[in-house]
Length: 121
Image (cartoon, rainbow, N blue to C red; front, side):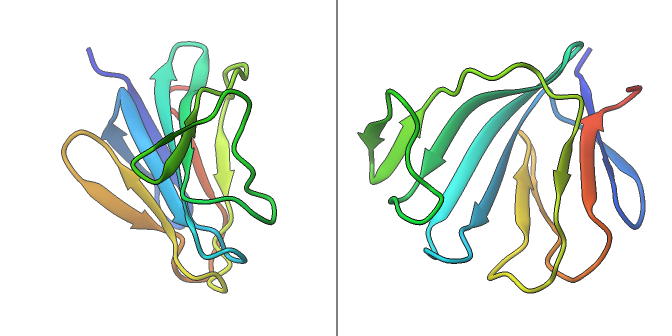
């Protein structure tokens, strides 16, 4: 059975996403940032982070290696019960959430924060 990711903020939805990628454009450096997450029984687990460049608040993590123009590393963090994404409407872009079948843009317009959590938590 695939794990489900529940998204709330405005309206609640659920997607089948055992793993998903969350991407955005850094508001100061205007560079891409992506994170790969797994939905587990313990919470959301950050598996990999990628940043296209470095600068203000976006330094590559320990052990980062350069792959196709992206600094890639594997953060070692405990599982999180949820992720809260700001939806200010004042940044260059919203958040792009991709699972195995599609991508969805979240938080492009000003609104309530968007909360990602394993369904049932």
